[in-house]
Amino acid sequence: MAVKITGKTKRIIERDRKVFLTTTREVYPFVAERGEGDFAYDIEGNRFIDFASFISVYNIGINANKGIRTAIKQQVDTLMHSAFTDYYSELPVKFGEELISMFPKGFGKLFLSNSGTEANEAAIKFAQIFTKRSYNIAFYGAFHGRSKGSLSLTASRFVQRSHFGPFSNTIHVPFAYCYRCPFNQTYPGCGLACVDYIKKYPLSKEVDPKEVSAFFVEPVQGEGGYIVPPKDYFKEIKRITEDNGMLLVSDEVQSGYMRTGKFLAMDNFGVRADIYTMAKSLGAGMPLGATVVSNDLGDVPAGSHASTFGGNLVSVAAALASIRFVKRNRKRLAVEAREKGRRIMKRLKEMEERYEVVGDARGLGMMTAIEIVKDKKSKTPGVKEREKIIENAFYNGLLLLPAGDSTIRIIPPLTVSSSSLENGLNILENAIKAASKNY
Ligand SMILES: Cc1ncc(COP(=O)(O)O)c(C=O)c1O
Image (tube, rainbow, N blue to C red; front, side):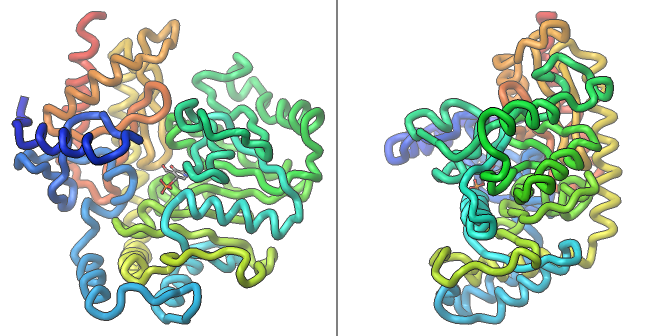
């Protein structure tokens, strides 16, 4: 095992446990020190290939790139916070113009916040203003954030919702999770029975569709397990929203920003949403969320929503440099995301064939994953097996993060080199092989 962890790491973890409430973490003892390109380094001097992009934040390279870091440094010396809720400033305007130029025609206007959950909170409120309706629809397995509005949409794991209810304004419906179809059917023979169910039951028996403000979707369900629905799925969901005057909100916090090979992941499905939310890689390492609404929805009343730090100049400087980089390299990034995504999927599919514990390999562009099971026939989630794989990979120099009950996400930066990609996939395969020893 290449990675060495000493008392230095252990002591920091002990101090951390004394001062911080236990909210998340507990994957492996990685104490971050620095990052560059494809690599993350811990305080022990260990170097890791990063297949998690620091939880989907560094799409264009770990610790962003030199141009972005320079823009951040310059802004720190000029003005960091401009009270964008009360005063005007040009930098956020420039960024807004650049961001909107990446959207389909007819978009629009945007609101800036600091995170994914805030971007979704804003979407919930704006949709209510635009439609004058109060219910929302979201999917089982969805993750839209942890503040109370977004949490009402989230239905991924009990631990995220326990003690915080009741959440009375969201109706949850089954997602097109074909590997574990809730209706025990197979696509395309199923004729999208899951969509039919939404129309026949929740929207016929539980809530009048005319009372629904917005249908929140993740184009690829992220935290819920990296689940890619069939190609024609969102066209059907869009039809439901159109037929009933609801808004379609595409949460692109994790799947957007070129991750799937397109700037907007929803574009892979040939569907235009009414509102889009983004965060994570949008700020290239700085906190930034955006809620982007279609022009035909109009505007919201002054004072109806705001955030002190929304439009923070340091975050916006990073995001502006980042989006300009993406714009300049859009074609290359798109082609590479698709090509590297294909290479990753080829290897993952081989692993699925070779190893009993790899139940399903799936992905869209470079948003890829494997679902670990105890065995292929029962499909029982391989929770312990996943833990072993992630731990083994860590001690061999590869950072991986889980998603869903037993999935491992594989999301290196889009800029990852061929050699890091191959090396990382080799470490992953060896870890799967080691976890498969008992089979
Ligand atoms: C799709 C999606 N929406 C919203 C969020 C919440 O983002 P944040 O943690 O920045 O609040 C996440 C975070 O993982 C996410 O994946």
